Length: 252
Image (tube, rainbow, N blue to C red):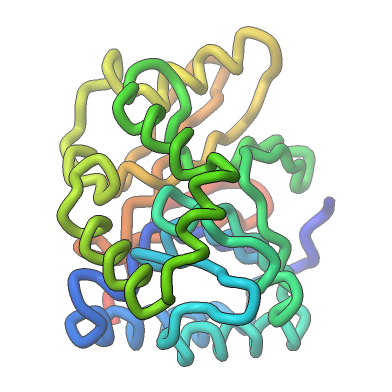
C-alpha cells in the first residue's frame, strides 16, 4: 500500500479505559479523544494494538456500557475515510464482531504483516509471544477456550462484568503490572521474538504494545522493534510518515 501524499499512519495501544474505575479513567478518555480529533486531518490509517479497554466481553446482545465518546470518535474517523484496524489485547481478547458490525473496524486476534511504501511491518498486541511468560500463556489458553467463554456467557452481565473488572485490576497476570520495567535487550521477550522472525524474513519494523513502555531497539539489518508505551502514564503513540517510524508523546 502506498500512503497518500501528506498522510500518515498512526499507532496506539494500552489505553485500559475503565481502570482503575470509570471515574478515574474518564480524563484519560477525554485526552485520547482529543488526540483522535487532532490526527484526523492527516491520518490515513490508525492501528489500535489492544487493551483499549481494561475489560471487554461481548454477549450476543450486550456489550459493556460506557466509553461512548471514544467509540463515537472512532466511528467518526472511520466514517470520514480513515482506515482503522484493531488488534485485541489480553484485556479485550473477548472481542468478536461488534467493532466490525457497528464501526466497520476489522478485528484481529493474531499478528499481521503489512507493507507501506515498501517498508514491511509486523504488527500485534504482543502478549504471549516469544519465550517465557508461561503463567500468562496458560491463563490465556483458559480464557480463549470455547467452553470457558460459554460458561462466562451464562453469568448475568452485572455479575460477569463486575467480577472480570475486579480480576483485571487485581490479578497481576492479567493486569500486566509486572510488565512496566525494562528487562534489558537480552531479556526482552518481544525482542527475542522479533529476532527469531528475522531469521526467516526481513521486517523493517516490529510494532507491539502490551509492555506499557515506550521502546525503540535496533535489531539486525536496520530492522527496529518498537513498543508503543501506554495511555496511562506515558501517553505515547507511533507515527509512520511514509519513510520513518517515530514514537511521540501527546502532551495536551
